[in-house]
Amino acid sequence: MTLGGFSGRDAVGGLALESITYVAGRTLLDDVSVTFPAGKVTALSGPSGSGKTTLLSIAGGLLQATSGTAELAGQDMWTGSGDPRPEVAFILQVYGLVPILSARENVSIALRARGTAPADADEAAEAALARFGIADLGERQVEELSGGQMQRVACARGFVVGADVLLADEPTSELDEGNRGVVLGELREEAARGAIVVVATHDPAVVEACDLHVALDEGRVVR
Ligand SMILES: Nc1ncnc2c1ncn2[C@@H]1O[C@H](COP(=O)(O)OP(=O)(O)OP(=O)(O)O)[C@@H](O)[C@H]1O
Image (cartoon, rainbow, N blue to C red; front, top):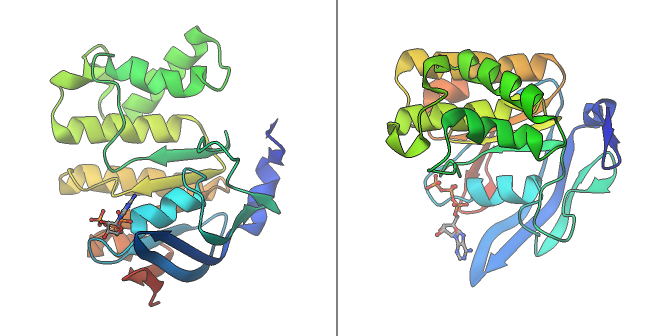
């Protein structure tokens, strides 16, 4: 499949961030250079406020760096609008779910927005919810769910797309150990099919389960 100028094979070279600086009142990211390779799960760790969310946002094209480049297959991740490229899926720290829609609808719209027919999108959404053990919650309005259940809906929505680049911001912060293991297993599956997978996390157990580890402190890479 080719969308927006990429093909799945383009992920092979990795997502390359070069000398990224981001200034918003003060310097939040300072000369960050890192490549997130395809086929691996990379942990992005660092204390609260160290810049993980900001870096993921630039990597996925939600934010424009003040200077430096974020590129996949030679193409800028910043499209000029703040809309990520269709090859990119986010699992956001604040979930970004639509509270009055059902869990299934929240997952399905990620595919519908990419042109999948509604019936096919709904079917894929149900399968994605099942991957996270919440198939029985498909009809429930998201605002009626617990925090951990919402987080699993957000995971299903991120995973359902089969994106070349999956950027997950603290995807397990609300989960018990069993469900954390499920999410980690699914992240590994995505990498195994060749995706670039990056997980921002505070959790040492998540870092341990990843293939690679990049650490930030005060906006700089420290490992
Ligand atoms: N738009 C903005 N304008 C000004 N400061 C910002 C903006 N966005 C984030 N910040 C600040 O930038 C720093 C980095 O924030 P960021 O959310 O990237 O950190 P983080 O490592 O993801 O933190 P956490 O682990 O708490 O989610 C913080 O000090 C935050 O207050």
